[in-house]
Image (cartoon, one colour):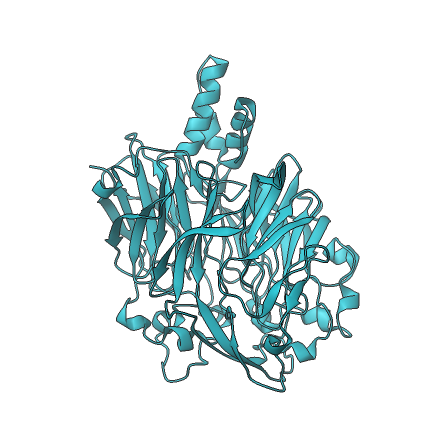
Length: 588
């Protein structure tokens, strides 16, 4: 559990939340100013995943395990878009900012007025030709706020800065070209005076990178790649792990979540699958795909890199969030990074050095028997390694992961992580594929299917000090939405059927639920409104990889369609229809 000093709380609250929140502190007393700054910052939710540590924990506590049963809808808002709604809105002061999937509209809603009317709307101008280039739906994971600006990544690879008060476009820069297979779906993150963004497109042979732009001008400060020469990666050892020039189309895209430790001055991000999905075409470890990087945010150079799945043969994209907490590991307090990976293992690393401290399966795993803590490499079951020479059956988890991008939450009150998981397995056959710029570069036939027991998901509480599950709630469909924990000892999560559920953080008892208009693949968040009341908000709108069949009106005849998603979710239309609605709740 983290123990914050009051001094660090001021610095942390201002740095991890918003400048606007800190600027609203006017008390003359240093102690009062400390409390007011921390309280004001916590009342807001000014960035995806709540803070730079990505804990998704709020210290707001009006809603408790005792009274959450009384939650009612306060108001709702239609986004006007019917595709997958990932991410969450953000709140700064009396304004909520809501994003949408393509065309990536942004709305500013006035929370000081009844029904939260629209203050302004930003509608990007994008070519619809980018839509089929998006791998797994036209999703967007959100906007972020800093220094009076809203930052947005568009699907067509533009990063945009908007005036938070007026919606005026301040600058716009092009980070890539969708005609080459590059897209952008991740939320940006501001670190000091830089906004950092990633890229999608691993299924098109895109070479992954992260880019830092000046928040005031948009000028590129640095760009670092996941694969290639040391000067382009910011870390040695990549090129020699690839055959020939395969690293030039090596994947390792960076479409996930980011975190930052201001004390160590390190920025953390993951990288995705190597290209192609056929491992026979790319012998070697394929560094640095499937890797956690710790980078200097001013230069992009890496302090360390840890590859979770060398020579990936399962599409276990390694982009999931890296949560920064302090934990008692083997009797000593350690500054750690915790990552629940698609490959089914939960990793605990020293976030200063990259030392691997723990690696434990958090879902059913059979592709590997464990992870060697000394070498850091998985102990593979050779029978589950895929190839173009055979169709490997019943691999668990599936390519969709033990957990996909849906972010976890960590509560310092319980010491538990709250993890939305998938219970999916797959059949996987590699196929030979030739690279052609801007065309799919997948190279595998995959069918996902329900895992042991038949339930396709489970929401679990996980003790990171023991590496074990504390409790779990089995779900008919995958738990594809993110988690939220609060100081009221309530945890919220959504389901693909559209239920927003509140559970007791300690016991896992379901305390309340509400059926939203469409499936939830977004992340619940909480804030304190201008009226002083606590609110909980969530986007509903089925889609993403798991919901692509419904979101894109796909045929259900081919189980390999949607990169194998139809095999696992052919019946999804029985549970959810298309949608795009923000629903906000509060106590009476």
